[in-house]
Amino acid sequence: MRPLLVGGASLALGITGWWALAEFGSIPAYVLPSPGEVIDRAVGLWNSGSLQLHTAQTLAEVGQGAAIGAVIGVVLAMVFFHVPWINRLLMPIIVVAQVTPKISIAPLIVLWIGLGIASKVTLVALVVFYPILINMLARLQSIPSNMRDLAKITGMGPIRRAFRIEFPFTFPAIAAGLKIGLLAGVTAAVIGEFIGATAGLGYLEKQGQDNDDIRLVMVTLILLSLIGYLLWAVVGFIEKKASRRYA
Image (tube, rainbow, N blue to C red):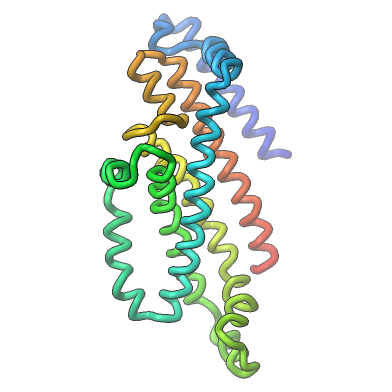
């Protein structure tokens, strides 16, 4: 409970400071609206159904992209571990793709795939799979030699060895990679919605920017922060459980 209380107190202090600055700081409302004004805007969006629609769109993009990225990351890690020459061949290409700013890649993906959800899912998968790949591959390479020898002595085949040793041993690393990837995935989804979309919180935020609606921008920003934190917390909980089970 102590971290929750400290976090809640910190959040309350931040909101109080925001309110005091908006009310007594001589800052125009079109620059910094008060928390009450932002809440009123959020309630209006909720009553119209717009907030639910755009939030569901962004969650769908992040969820589907994360699932695809996780599968790709796990499969590539297993392939790279068992077939080193493929690792040496493909890893430089993957690294180049990852160091390229995603805001530069997003227009190309949107032009190739279109304005629909598929382009955002692709962008999210692109940023999610890499931390899972790197974490899992490093964990696979750290499997103790006595465990490998035991697998050979007992005659374990590749599939049985993967499910009895490799996946359980690397599960904490997979969870940690997913934890990092999801945070980047939310950002990637918003970038894709900024570039070209018909729905989503990023699209809604862009509409607020184009219409000088600072309250709408702040509503979407707070929601995106909340989504990122909740995803981080859920995967962090799974990571903790996995670390206890497969430490």
